[in-house]
Image (cartoon, rainbow, N blue to C red; front, side):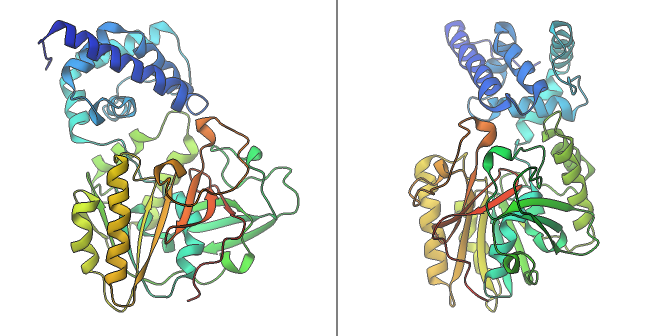
Length: 386
């Protein structure tokens, strides 16, 4: 077992910080989303000895993220309370197993990142992509497994309503609109695809059911590229990153992998988006519209790096013959210099966090975190006509 046995006072301070991080994760992120993760992280936050192990064995920062440790144990088939709270005895079993297999757990933590693709967000991106001048060259920043680069390989069921009340949405029920008033089901996407994503929206029917985007080039940048089609261990990792109790998300992930299995692999470059973006963008075919996009991918960057990223994207597109477009899909706090979106948000809880969909720096819609809703912002214009 690898443990740093240096300064005792420093270790105690580090353990306190780790414990606080787990307690905050429990009530800010896991509460209302995963009872198993909520209880497990809360118990870790009260376990001084275990937090000392974490602070002494793992580098501060990203490698001490609670979601990363919890996914690593799941990835190794350690015990986890998939059905919700199980009590002190279950935590004791989880703790004993994790300590006993700590070298293996730590190796996974050091090798992996907790980011997992959410292909269902393509339901929110599709109308914008279809409205851009065709054909497209797609470049995704923060693409761990490349599943977001295949919006033309999935099927979509849009529940069209004049306005869908956010209060009636849940992460567990994308596409439902119980009691939301007039509703029209609109089918779009690739016929026969095993991946079917639901989305409630007030966008016009012709914006949803038009031709699929014509994509002639696909590429992405990721710090830890994954290939869930060719590498079974990569698929197991993506599945381990799905939180216990979220069976629908796990099913969406498996279906998306099947949908892209026969497709040519996109070019995924390992590295930092800012460092790799210029060279990769230069590879896009000149006859295609370059669309640089990212979806819930920039939150881990410091604010100054996010601003640098935005300037870089704008400069690359401005310098490209024929230009191009930038689609950002992030929580609004990640890109606060964008014009604040005006929309109703009756739920302050993290589980109801919306993403702001922006085209070339102009917010056009707010969406559910997993693409389960797409609501146009007042005054937002449609995408540029192709």
